[in-house]
Amino acid sequence: MKLLVNTKGILLLLLILSGCATQEEKPKTVIAAWQPYDESAMIAANADHPSTRMRFKHVQSVVSDKNDLWKQVGDQIADFSEQDYNNLQSMILEQDIPMIQSFIKEGKLTYEQLTKWYLYRIVKFENDSTKHLNALISINPNAVADAQRCDRARAEGDHPIFGMPILLKDNIGFEGLPTTAGAVALTNNNAPDAFIVERIEAKGGIILGKLNLSEWANFLSDGNPNGWSVVGGQTLNPYGRGKYDTGGSSSASGVSMAANFGAAAVGTETAGSILSPASSNSTVGLKPTIGLLSRGGIVPISSTLDTPGPITRNVTDNAILLDAMTGSDPKDSATDGKTASDTYISQLRSGKLEGTRFGVNKRYITDTTYAQIPYTKAVAVLKTAGGEMMEFEAAGMNYQGFVELLSADMKIDLPAYLSEYADPAVPFRSVADVVEYNLADTLVRIPYGQARFDGIGETELTEEELVALREQLRVAGANVLEDAMKTQELDVILSINNWDAAIAAVAKYPCLTIPMGYTEDGAPIGLTMIARPMEEEKLLQLGYAFEQLTKSRKIPVDYR
Image (cartoon, rainbow, N blue to C red; front, side, top):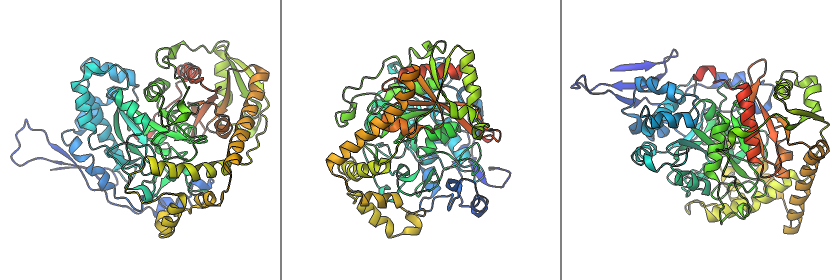
């Protein structure tokens, strides 16, 4: 019997050798039991964190047993060893999807080995109390079997997503695993595949598991830490566990990509929920035009502003996952008339920085508050490459009615989801039902309160008033962006992280964030490009060109 332990004495993996085993027989890998640990030191250390959103009440989930997660993995990696993991690492770690596919085509790697490698890596870090990130809520118990089917049907794979293990934010439906939105109220929500999941699987993509998130996509509490959900616990940033914000609400979609827990991940955004975690974890995140991707089967906040989108380690994989998810959904009228480009992948490298007119926000290059942020350096790189850098004074945005819009939409959209997609066993049919359920156990279910859910119940808009508010905010956001774009004849506007996400959200303009560097103390920072509706192809091409020039992303030191 051989025990593998870390320096803290935490049991990671138990390799059991049968007493009658021959030298030819391979030892079995058995996942050691997770033991809850004393998290008081981290909570105390964060009590005075400069950001109130980093002041934790809990780190580990207060309702979930991580050993239930390992039950979904154990049999799948029983014949996969640390040696296997190390032997395959150079072909998988930080590699893009086309490179991984090339190794498979050459016979050096199989889809089964690829899937087991990711599962083994998840256990390796998530079962270690000194490195866990609380990224996973559930794991597909059939992931390896799905990969084996891909190996047998390799000749049928005509899309680069074929055989790739994909992770989903846990507000996205996947048949076989609950869709919880991180909430106790939905732990038994065995909902069907979301439309975008059907699209991924139709092209041969493998759903590896479901990811932690800010509970109810960050529309439950007011001021709760990003990445906290009762079901998944507190998601942590691999660049600094407890030091840096994960961003939210697609927190673990960003974290899982930074830590190489899957080939690609799907997040969702209402106003910043893809851009924020992608940039906070040195990954690439695309917030598409509303209606380019279906929202069918996704736990909603706002049918006006919600959209899923890809979060990946590089722009190439982002284009691949976006392409895999596109399609018109008869149950989501917003997708009607939205035509996806069939060249997201094939024309990715054709983007030209030379002659492109980039809008540069003067405030971000003149205000000393932003001196640590490498925005000015990124602007200089683009200028050297031939980009035309056009400085502009950003117009102000009136957000009056924004929260009211989200509340009014969710008051309608959540009951619609519960009726159309949720497991019939879920007893709730309204936001008020969930609020009442949470109040029965305030310490466990809502440790940070449910102020935003309370606000939903207080919102009273007529249908006409809601329609008018949607248009008012759309016009206000579009006017702010077009004030710069028309005046300066801009192709894209350059922003930082999710700082202008709300403006782009209400205007329904797409955004792409790409790693552009780190602050002096190591926090990841993203360069965010904003374009006009349905210009995702332009964003991906320009993002790819910038990425190739800078290659700014660095894998987190403790997760190499």
